[in-house]
Each structure stands twice: as C-alpha cells, then as structure tokens.
Image (cartoon, rainbow, N blue to C red; front, side, top):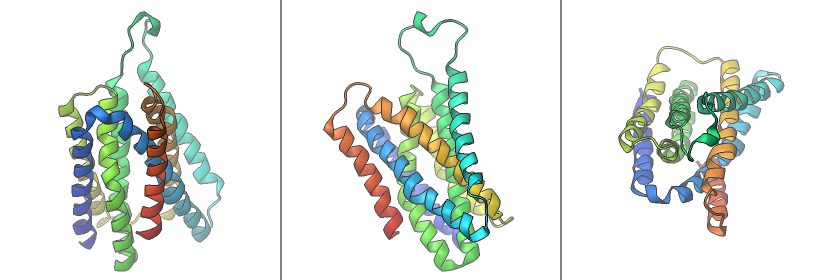
Length: 241
C-alpha cells in the first residue's frame, strides 16, 4: 500500500502543474518552449538510461526498444496525419486547429502517467528504498506532465472545461497504475518495449508538434533559453532525485 500512498502525491503534483498552465494560458508559447525541453530531457536522462539498464540486466537485444521507439514515433505521426486529413483541400480553409489531435496527445500522456504509477508500484515490489526513490522522481516531473496535458489540449483549441477534465484523468492515472501493481507483476520485456515506444512518442510531439508551435509567431532567445532550461531541469531531477 506504500505505492498507493506515494502515488497520491503525484495526483497533487500533476493537478498543480495543470492549474499553472491554465492560469498562464496566454503565455502558452513560453510554456511550450519549456515543455519541449522537458520532453527531450525525459527521453535522454530518464527513459534511455532505464532502457540501457533493463537491456543489460535482462540480456535483451538492444534493437528491440529501438524498434519500439520507431514504432511509437511513426504510429503517432500516422494517427495525427490521418486525423487532420479532410476530404476537401486544406488550402480551401482558413488556418485552423484539430482538437482531436490534442486529445490523442493528452490520452497518450495519461497512459504514460498510468505507467508512472506502475513504475512506483514495481519499485516498492523490489524494496521500499527503491520505491521511495522512484516515487520522488515521478512526483517531481509529474508537475510538468500536468502542464503538458493542458498545453496540448489548449494548443489544439480544445475547450478549457474539456482540458481540465483531461487534467483530472491524468492526475488520477498514476494512482490507478500503482493500485494495479497489487494484482500483477510487469515482466521486464514488456517494460523495455513500453519505454522505447513512449520515447518515440515523446520525441515526435516534442520535435514535430510542441517546439514548432512555440516558435510559430517568432523565435527569441527567451524561447531558446526556456527549452534549454527544461532539459537542464529534468537533468537535475533525474540526477539528484
């Protein structure tokens, strides 16, 4: 039950991050610049090291998580492009957004938050010390998960009410993930494929969606600095948490 108790703190962290993004929604281009750096940092300093550790520890072929990464990248790219294809020509319309793309992105983040909860549960299955360390790391970066959920929803012109609903789902997801580990054990092979798949998804929405939108009006040193700050923030979180 320790995993469930610690996962409750992730609810608070995620929800507060989302409220922060709501309050400063008129500054979304700044938040998106920071968010893009956060996503790059999570992939580089959190997911990849864990993949390497799992591959070495369980003697898994390194090509497997890389296949999952490419699959995750291409799957979301294909889904996004299918969603935005109209039966008429796009040039016949004024510049517009596609709310369903934001919902796809938010749902993927909710799935990631659910797996964060599973990660906490698995940590406590190993021992309490590992569980606490994993929980602290998850709680630290779940604040940005809440920001990401709101940012992706609003960026694609979803309503504030619907955005808050998805934020609530994202906040609950780690708790449900931790609860689920009371009933099963996740095999190492699945974890590696999941991590690779999610890395591909994060790289896609960070590089092909969020970062270009952050600079859609104009680029500036402030935006570039916020992206670097996002990467550095996650580096510190993963090194010292």
